[in-house]
Amino acid sequence: MVKLNIVLLEPEIPQNTGNIGRTCNAMGAVLHLIEPLGFSIEDKYLKRAGLDYWKELNVKYYKNYADFLAKNPQGQKVFISAKANKRCDQFCYEAEVYLIFGKESVGLPVEMLLGNQDFCVRIPMFANTRSLNLANTVAIISYEVMRQHSFAGLKTEGGLHHSHGKVRKSIL
Image (tube, rainbow, N blue to C red; front, top):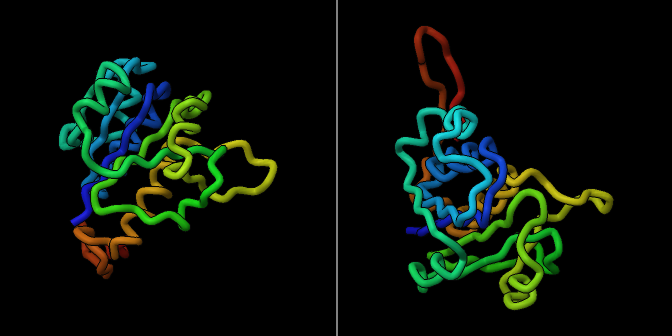
């Protein structure tokens, strides 16, 4: 079973964090939030983006990156950055992985990237694109991790379902 962990270093936008929380629930992942946060966890936009999933989310909070490392010494740490050399699909993710994302405005600190170059990955993008939305990036990389582990623990069968008299197709 994959132990997927999503780590947000100083996230700034509550809607992104709310959407990331929904992705974490869909993946069975733990969300780690490293302060300072650019919003209150009581923020209405965070709650709206996370919908009713937020109350079910396994979320942990840390005062700073050193606090996070001290409390999570195990597992593979992977740093996500548009500045990385290695593509996300060319990296081998371990069964216990911490995907570390920087804040929306500047990404991860350069020192952090330089100190972990062998564990930095990026998403391929059109040459003139600076970056993707943080919530989208989390979803793309998370699903790549799960794909490499044959989507272990996730519902992989689709089908038609009846709901309130309507027929709809399940996307998962």
